[in-house]
Image (cartoon, rainbow, N blue to C red; front, side, top):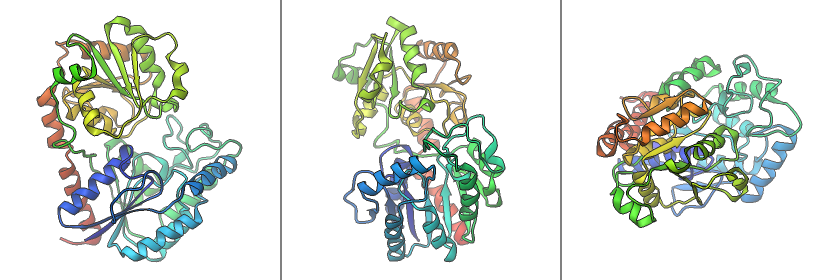
Length: 408
């Protein structure tokens, strides 16, 4: 079987790591696997192709923000992608996140629909069935056409114009054309939302995200990790991943306020911190900020030495950082928004009411106590290896591929 995945990035960020995991596992299992992506670092893999250029990305981002049309530019890049599809001749396309200023929706889907190319499409957020935004929060306009968008300046942002009704209509025409599809999401929550959208005409199923929980994210020696990075055995450590904290959806203010209120009770470590957000740190003296890193061993060591991982997102599908932390033996405290509670069942973590600062802090305090009742260490990691391994995820996708192609 020959599979070609398409995503905005490769192995950079949550969805992109999922793409890379599927690609690697498919190849280990003897399948022909290819990836085409638009943005980010080029990789040394002849089966992985970046088809956009940096100037094209910047132009598309600027034009999209000025015009309010997202997915209407990048014509040359999308033609390169189509030529690559013709070169690879895949049995099916596995689509992931298509927004991100790197694709022209009309060109790509006119090509897909004309040739009735079978597509498995994994939704990592809501963008495919919403006029423009990735998460709609309390808004329900997406169910019948969008327009008068209350989140026009959220990502993907529009500075001046509201074309969400037009984009919703056009996306429906393009995305639900002649090509056969199966829609996959990592959470039951998002699967349910997809079924209520114009994608409800297709099979919509849940396949949990998987990570490398055996060779990359696994429990490391807590005492050794703390000694390595300069922390004491007695320190109470709260860990967060600060990538994207400029976006209010990520809930940075909740974890930073929690740090202020916890004071000497705990140290809060934020990995992926960007200096542009330094103003948020005023009034705190127990936050340690670290830049982003691609060093997965370092990440696993920080996950392992923390007492609790904090996920303050106000909207989230099925976060890979949550899986990574639990695979390293550290439970999670987060809000009960969207797909987050599905990850924290059975003692793996604590889900508190979304936006409730006091409940969030109390959840962190409980998780810091040795009598929290939460799973930790190898006991917690074993559940992630069982339920969220790369092998299990890829096995489920292979079943979907065969189903779409009516094999077996």
